[in-house]
Length: 194
Image (cartoon, rainbow, N blue to C red; front, side, top):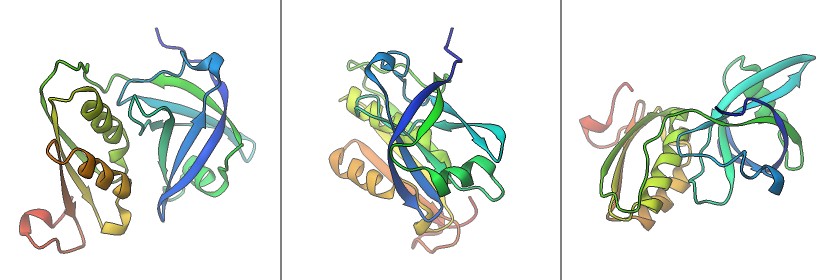
């Protein structure tokens, strides 16, 4: 049974991903390392008091299981109480209440596997996929991953630099197909509604 208690973690880093999204890394103290060990595709529930009200939101972990850190992506949502609070106020050193990883959106990985994975994401839905992609490619040297990733415009692509790094690192094992809603990609297949 999973732990549904909240623990105080410090924010280690906050990086902008796009004009409307941030990536938040957490410092996990040694005594909580086992509680916060995660499987690719899991999420964290964050809790904060905003304008006197307790607000909880769940965000997918966007780190690979072997990255040595734990982070989440938070996209600003119109009238989103927590997402706006996070994008406006989160800073390194700030304390936040965090529930240990939850969720079962994963497949078992093994170095002996030689599989073809297909990941499909739109917008901020890339966050759990980043974890799945990085973990699968790192853990299973014989496996390949194809990502079909839809966005409105190229400036709204979350983790663009990281995806380019993954593409270059795993050149023969990772294929990334972009589909844009509002920008011409040079082929009808890669344009249109997402």
